[in-house]
Amino acid sequence: MIRRGTAEKNIPVTKHWLRTAETLAEALPYLRQFSGCTFVIKYGGHAMGNDKLARDFARDVVLIKQVGIHPVIVHGGGPQIGSMLDDLAIESTFVDGLRITDKRSMDVVEMVLAGSINKKIVSSINAEGGLAIGISGKDGRLLQARKVERTVRDPDSNIERVVDLGFVGEPEKVNADILTMLDHTQAIPVIAPVGIADNGDTYNINADTAAGAIAEVLKAPKLLLLTDVPGVFDSQGTLISEMSRLEARELFSTGAITGGMIPKLETCLKALENDVGAAYILDGRIPHVLLLELFTENGTGTKINA
Image (cartoon, rainbow, N blue to C red; front, top):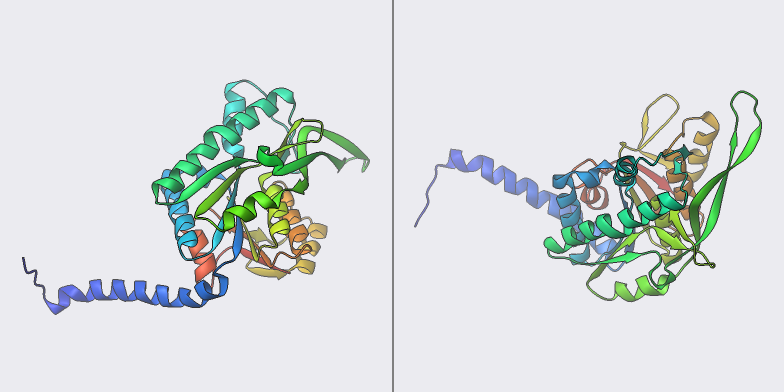
């Protein structure tokens, strides 16, 4: 069947495909530059609970792998963990964006992170043609953990005190051999940030912190943290599109960095000090935010340079 149309009717279609072609052409230098590189992507926030955004993320990850870049996914699950704890009537308390985790809470954290969330992300990526493999930080001792303690200052008395966060840990060592082996395959690792200590205890590791530690040991050119905010804001509430490590550190002294942004920015700075090329804090609620950042000139969110 021959389909005909007037020139006028075809103009919008032509413009649409022209924009698509221009976008692909704009991406070409970045595809060449990053082919063969490993990028570490922290996937989290409420975007994980949005079916459309979750599908966009899965497609983007598969595309990134198809063009020769090796994505390593580290996922969070704070809202989902919080919801399950609420259902079980287990109270949650946070210090500097980190959840205080007792033994009962840790069992729930591991069940949600290494179970339902991890397998859902794996299934989403595989449904889009990828070959995702779910891994817990305990598998192969990928994430060997040590206990974390936080010192907080009372705003009234100005007295510092040490807060016991329970089974909250940080990476002491990352077994990169597992991930390096996967680099040479079509597999896409999807990592639940649950670590194991030398004595066998299981620890809840902040997903941003875990992603940063993995990026460090892999010497990743890019560490990308997806979150629920547009990026990093200064003390006047203005979004910062790009800054240096020194400028990022100065933000802490101004009081502009609070709550969950504290471990994110701390993670970025530590990663940049340990041979990671650049760190990005991106709004995971934006459709195809990974492609916008990686393959377009302007990008989005906040970039922190080494």
